[in-house]
Length: 286
Length: 321
Image 1: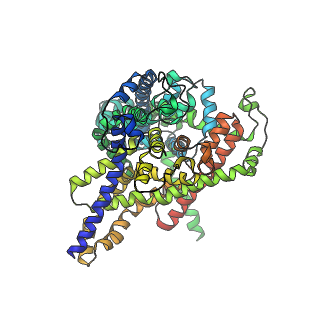
Image 2 (image 1 turned 90 degrees about the vertical axis):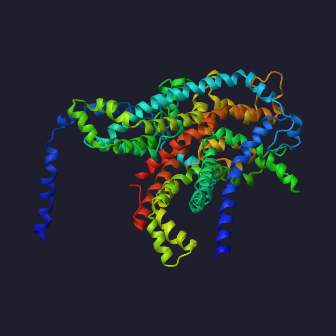
């Protein structure tokens, strides 16, 4: 019996260690390569430890003006979308918790239906065109500023707040807007932070919308520029002075990846518990 | 019998009447501030979600930029016929379905297995460390994931090929060989999301009553019996709910990842409906045709999710609506 139990333990621990290893290896490898000299990288000698340690790749990355513009743009989009998204989502979610609201059922159905059906790429593009939102920062911020998932998540959270608190507000003469502002929102700081983070990370990572709705490079966010540096072969848009684009060394590509991902990796250990909480809140009611 | 039949609607009316008595104006007055709060949300959904749905009519028209949506001539089902008669279409439909089905087949059980194994770990620190590490890739953008895949599989010095060389195998040029695309797409997807998708199962696992395990132990059940007869039934509703959601998404192969990974050499297995719509619509500017393709996909997806939901309602009493 003891032996059987030990085999079981051994299997599960090695399975989990294997998962951790294949998750971490690519990141550690990229860090190692980004600090290595070019020759050992080309020979495929670099694994987890940098060979010929140097920071020239990072120096080069930090000289790339496009990357900095893109960084600035991404921050504008993230802040804009998160603020607008949170405002619209929390107001809408609060209204949806009130079953006595006129058209409550109709509004709920209207929101949920968009989870299962959408107009698609081209009609959405035409609407954006009609609104003159193509190639504008507002277009990128507004196109996805409300997510149905997070709207429903927030509604679930708001409806878990005891109703007595709202009633006491009503006795003090507060209207619905006042109740939301003075009672519900202060009690929901954790939920708002969580959903704000969801929005921020989604915007930070979004590629598709900025890619199809923006035409001028000076408005491109990080992800679009990253594609040009790391993926696209046509490197003319990138100003690596005098560098032959086709021969751009791995170390520079990986350094670029690291520079653009480090903000997320650094804050991630602190915020991941909020994300987990967010998923849990959502799972309570399915 | 007759009396009973007549009786029923009457009571129904009586019960309903107090609500009906409230006039529309009174209800409006009671909820005017709520409606005001909902207004931005309403505008967002109307403008960015429902107006595009209205725009689907261009798939029945020969859309012309200068004539606009309303004045372009009707062509009926021309573009739908064009799509289903085009020999290329078969290929992209097959690719989309296969990627979706493989993703469901391999990607759906993976986080369940991961969650079950993690649930067996008694050491809490180890459990938390593994979990935290496994979430990490979820937060990395698709662009970077695709960039990593392309670099790592590079035949020159990507580490996967270096590994193959070190164990004495020939290097493989993964990204120009059509037969590798699906494996790479599904594999990197599982790599990215296994930990994150497991959260919801881990949450469900903590809600299983521990007394059930004690009772099973008393009945002489071993570890496998317990997993099979207590743990799995305990999280079955969660599994079914997520299965319905994921089945609805089978055709929903996102544009981003395929677009970032593919190249003309592997269109044969990599090209999917959304990338095709992008090339036809936004690159070749054939808006009507692209919309017709997209619409065909949306309708099939809607049918898929509705029918899975119906089946699951019949078979297991778990459903989304």
